[in-house]
Image (tube, rainbow over all chains, first blue to last red):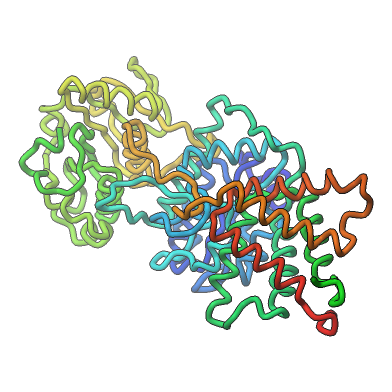
Amino acid sequence: MAGTDGRLRGMSDVEDGAPAVVLVGAQLGENVGAAARAMLNCGLGDLRLVAPRDGWPNPQARAAASGADAVLDAARLYDDLRSAVADLHHVYATTARPRDVAKPVLTPQEAAAAIRRASARGERTGLLFGRERIGLTNDELSLADAILTIPLNPGFSSLNLAQAVLLLAWEWRRAGSLPSPPRPSAAGAPPATRAQLLGFFDHLEGALEQTGFFKTRELRPSMVRNLRAIFHRANLSEREVRTLHGVVTALCGRRKDQLE
Amino acid sequence: MAGTDGRLRGMSDVEDGAPAVVLVGAQLGENVGAAARAMLNCGLGDLRLVAPRDGWPNPQARAAASGADAVLDAARLYDDLRSAVADLHHVYATTARPRDVAKPVLTPQEAAAAIRRASARGERTGLLFGRERIGLTNDELSLADAILTIPLNPGFSSLNLAQAVLLLAWEWRRAGSLPSPPRPSAAGAPPATRAQLLGFFDHLEGALEQTGFFKTRELRPSMVRNLRAIFHRANLSEREVRTLHGVVTALCGRRKDQLE
């Protein structure tokens, strides 16, 4: 939760449980600054930058933040998306239009309610935003649990990066003034962190690699995405991730002479 | 109503009954353009400019509109606020903080609902936005029926002009009965039948049985239930069940000499 994080201590009016904003490959410093401003407007403080095009820190970002310096000062820089989301429990990727991926598609309202329910359970959520022109790659999308789409005018739906951050931050803020719907039932167990889930993916994919499961190098990425989508949808608990590690280890260790 | 207005005919996806946006004394062309873009994103097309500081038309506005040219082309220019709002039935003035004026104060949600109710009765509403630095004068405020305040972070509530337009335009759009994005499914793929799912469970559990994964006979039933729960939750497609059969077969067939 942002507010419990040392970096954000003392940042006035940043709320505990606010989602992290993860900007992937942002091209314009100005947009990063405007996004920081929109975040602080709505009480969000946890900004994460994955390989911003023009480096970091960035003077254009500072100018465009119009005083939201605390968010920029606390921003964390990452080389890759994987490490940027490692400590999060839920990751939603914003896309201009739903793609053909086997993931749930949420409206901003649904996402805001889910984030609030998660933070009430002590779980952290991140919102991914892609590059200004080309958005997120399919590989990056494969790291998200769900797709978040803003239902805008279908004839003119392209939103500036900072505007997209604002709308989602606002929806999160807005959801705080409303009573939350009841928790989903199946949720007793602590969910896996993103790092735990990615650790399982590594184990499974590494094991499959050695068996020749990925027929060709070209097929591998889409096969990996399809597999990951299954486990994302299952919304795994920590314990279930341990179980699945055990399954892979057990199956790999099966002795040749025991095969039928 | 915007859509019934000759100026806006042919502007794709602008909705009847959308509120007019009245920018009073806007200082930066860039903000006017970004406001036009935000309007069209949300299906608004009726832009009215009262004495913009740098004159009109404005090339900076064009650049910042990112393709929302139709809104700029249809924009009307006025010398004073009175004439800009003459044909409207309801006028709401946005302010960063409620002032000491004897007018109702509305949230964005309340305003959006009121605008929709009014347009259902054939009545037109305008949203007033003041100058970037100093907002609206008291005289200008006196032309409004109500004050509209966006409840942002009290420690950092100053919103860029175009961001304010976006939030209110979005709230108006959101209040309409908009179709939700497509519902979750495994991206349209046909779901697995129960028989297919059970066939996979048999395969997986049979393979695990031979590895000693189920430590004791007593533990087996609960371990099986936990495993099945994961795959039930994933809501598998037919194709995904085939993939998972392939995973189990591949891992089982892994040769002993390939183990690390």
